Amino acid sequence: MPTLHPYQQHAVNNVISSFSSNKSVMLQMPTGTGKTHVFCEIIKNVNKRTLVLVHTRELVEQIQQRLLAFGIKAGTIMAGTIQQPHLMVQIASIQTLTKRDIAYWPTKVSLIVIDEAHHATAHSYQSILQNYSQSDVKILGVTATPYRMNNSGFKGTFETLIESLPINNFIDQGYLAGFRHLATASPELSRIKIDKITNDYDLTELGYLMSQETIMSDLIESYIKHGNNQQCIVFAVNRYHSKVIVERYKEVGISAAYIDSKTPKEERKTIIADFKAGKIRVLSNVQIFTEGFDCPDISVVQLARPTHSLVLYMQMVGRGLRKKKDGSQALILDNAGLWKKHGLVTKHRKWKLEGVENNAKTISVKNSVGIVEEKEPANVIEVEGLEMQEIAACSPAISMVVSEPELIKITAHFIKQNKEFASYSIKEQQSITLAPFFNNLAKSKKPDEIIISVKSLQIPKIWDEKLKWIDELENTIAHETTSSFTQIGWEEVDNQLLFRFIEKNVDLNNLNNNNWNRLKSHSKVDAE
Image (tube, rainbow, N blue to C red):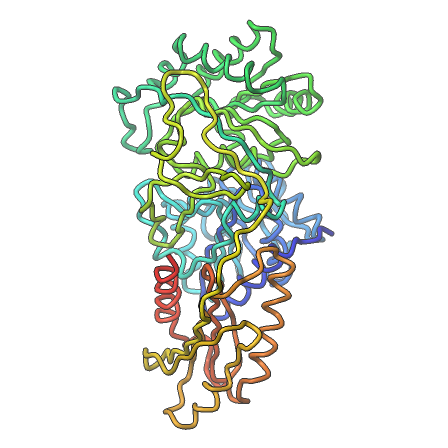
């Protein structure tokens, strides 16, 4: 039985807690931090009939094996597989399910899990969710990147978004690998037409452009110069481009191969096995390792595909950030100039259901003491020509900058009345108490729900220490609350904590989540 990391268990707890007041929840966790482990644990805890929706055959097979590791035998709904409808958990290929008569869809479903949930607004997913909309089914969507190309977001599909820690934090704590990001100048793409369906570059035109001699020579040279003969996965534009890349690597004596959706399953397995064994040094792929396929441990990621898609960019780089057994860093060879378009993966992105905000054009760079900071592009190297240069490096922080602590402000908000009740400030975290609020409740018209915000905290960065610290704070709070109130959840927003209390006789289905979400959003703005 897999053991969850503390941050994974925290995500499980947050989702289950959120289900007490929301029907649909989106969970964001970076690539490589174990989203599948999290929703497998949630399925085990819920222990009711569950439908898992995925969009590739590989994901169906992988999730079935992962659930089995959690002691859950799951059936599959996919062409070419034997149906086992009696099993409590069913994993469905979205393509297969939508083609079948609704009469044969799973019934009495209590939980729907959508993997790679940034696809959830597509018509195929929406038609399935609509079919179950009249029931009491809960919906969980998991993704590394809650983002759509038109930045329109996911309102209407999910009621709330639970964000994980930023990628920097996972790197600092050793859950993801550190990296160096090297880049060349961006290729000239102004004449490449945009596909009206995908809102991205036309792949045929882009494939020919990226296969041109100058760009291809730079691609091979950058690996020879910086790759140190390490295992490398290349993200190519299309099959034509991928073949050209492989042939060029072979011409200089570097063993290489390519896989794509048309590669037969057994041949694909053999190629990946040879890559893992070191028989193949460079493996080029077309939309195989972006999502829906377990990626081997790799040291070098080569970006050879320009894209307007932030999701695709984050997925490509994220494949290199999975923690290595030897603890080594990843090397990102950005031959597509994607860092200029999207920033580094460590850029602070404010994920939200309405779409990610990209207000600041910043990238992350390491300062003289090893701390990763966000800076304007003008403060870093401006790449010129095709010579590859290092843009940034990110590794676990070796020191922390200690600043004079601010006064800690504690404020109580009445949700039903939509107003601030009282506020006071203290100097030390050890002095946090909510007694002034609960002692004065008798003097005010009793609310049915209270939000306590605690600002300017020095919250521990290491997850084990953080959860222990918050547990102690929660115990203090629970001890001080009156017998008529109970705490139902908390949320961290930068250096703030928000605690939510309700009267014990309040129906959880009637909670005012609009004001709760408004306070969370307002706290994020205040913190920036």
